[in-house]
Image (cartoon, rainbow, N blue to C red; front, top):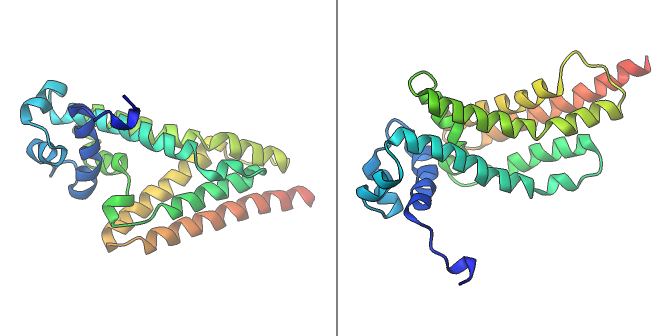
Length: 208
């Protein structure tokens, strides 16, 4: 049997449904019944795979990391020769993903952590791991860009990588507040300009 012919099991259906439903309604407003209906599975199947909605929340964060990790690993910005071009290409790729309705392009873990950071530590930790692990994929290119320009910045590659995620997550909040992607795209453009200036200013100081 080919992989395309293999039907997803109930657990996979529930995780896929969670990505959509939680981004649409929020974590707290999403019920087990709604997740089961969206996944097309019974409530018994839900509790066979997950002891609670919170346990599914943790699994959904991990599933999100795996799914988006594969997407970004195969993204075209990795093909740029210069590290700064790869960083800027990453931001252009993020901008290109701002398609469809707000739930279609906003971040599952960013949504969940805003609601659960104090009340469900397990979900908070899973969301933190997802965001910081994704940020870490940018660090090598940032370090390479610093080295290429022989810079000695008073910031670290890790801090700049995390800053990109702070801006993008904030852009998603603004998109939710305004009901559209335009303000999020503007935020990413501002971030791109900031990074260009950061590296060009550093290179200019080196020449003085």
